[in-house]
Amino acid sequence: MRGIVVWALLTVAVVLVVIGGAVLLFVPATFGWTAYSPLSSSTFSGMYPLTEERAIGATCAIVGLLIGAGLVGWGIGRRSASRPGQDDEQP
Image (tube, rainbow, N blue to C red; front, side, top):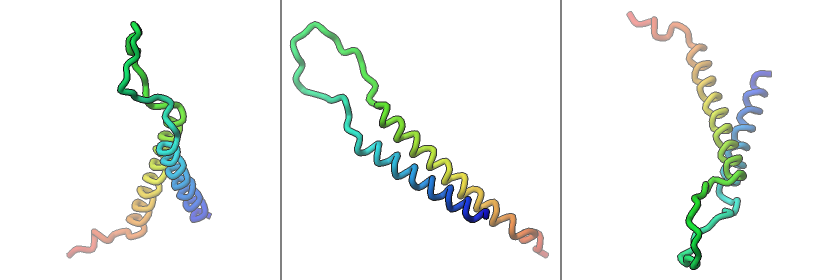
C-alpha cells in the first residue's frame, strides 16, 4: 500500500511541475514594451509583470518540487534506516 502512495505522490509532483512550467512558458503576457512613447502628459505608473496565471503556474511548479524533494528525503531516510548498525561494525 505504501508503494502506491509514493508513486501517486511522485506522479502528482511530476504533473504539477510540468503543468506549472507549461503555464509559465506559454501563457501570453498581457503587457508589453514599445519603443514609441506617445505624446501625452501621463507618467509611467509601474507594473507588476507576474500575471495571475503565471503566479498560479509558478505556485504549481513550486508545490510539485516540494513534494518531490519530500519524497527524495523520505526515500533517503528510509534507505539509511533499513541498514542499522552499519557504521557501528568498525573494529
